[in-house]
Amino acid sequence: MNATRHLPILHTSLRVAIVTALILAPVIAMNTARACAACGDTLSNDWNTEGNTTRPGFTVDVSSTFINQNQQRYGSGGASPALINNQVAAGQEVEAYTKSEITTASLIYNDDTWGVSAQIPYLNRTHGTYGTTAPLGSSYSSSADSGIGDIKVVGRYNGFSENQVSGIVAGIKLPTGNTGANFNAGTAAGTPLDPTLQLGTGSTDVILGGYTSGTVDSYGWFTQGTIQHAVATQAALGNIYYRPGDAYSWNSGIGYAGYGAKISPMLQLNVISRQMDTLAAPANPVTGMLSTGGTLAYLSPGVLMRLGGGVSLYSFLQLPVYQNVIGLQLVPRYTFTMGVRQSFD
Image 1: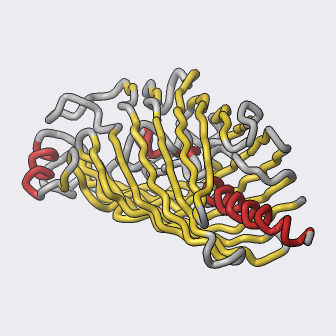
Image 2: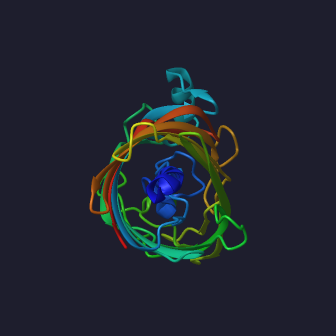
């Protein structure tokens, strides 16, 4: 009789666990999220909602993300060869590709109504650019850099809501990533990389946001929004003043619990809007603006597998459904993330 009475509670707990997995799943963290929407920057969509979880105790999460930005885009459409030639003829840099491999280690602790997470990214990034001299490719340069990125420490609190499914997040991004990398091959060898291509922004940012979640039958859902704003910057970054623009993100997701406790398919919609950077450097000679910032939306199917003992595996494929960038920028055709997490009671 007791088992029968507690059965609905078990089903509710399962749905809450799926919501938790949706909220916490992959950590394409905002450690590299800057105002440059796509120009050599990691297209992170803040999968992690800054450490929100309903399970008390410690959790360790390690994720790996692969991003290959090799598609030229101008505004909301693809960049034609004629447009690219016009850009380089006017003295605008035309980038070839940026590949980023990001491994993020996260340590999360949660109590009933509050929690805190620390996220430490390690980046391996290669980049190639055709330069600014016609004909295209006559001033080709490349770079390769790896190391720790910008660390985030973020807290959450959900004591405002009686059922503890809604809350706020607040945190800080620290300027721990390297900002002094140079091109190491080609005509630009030995000169500083663009600020948006560095492993860190050189800025201290604040992160603020909120979230809510719920269940409907066998489905769990969540929605959350955050803003990241630079409050302090380095006076010089490769002798160039640089301040990353504000980043606004909105993520929603749904998960299905009908397959039992071992596997949970998920689907997320991720939207991020990044404002233009402040950069003491020449603007795009064609548009008169910096080629940074834009609005991007991604539809992201994924799956979570629970192996027992608090161990879970997850993977997500991030597919673009809308990309509108300022100026000529590189965007990826997809982003792939996989990871493992261990929860301790």
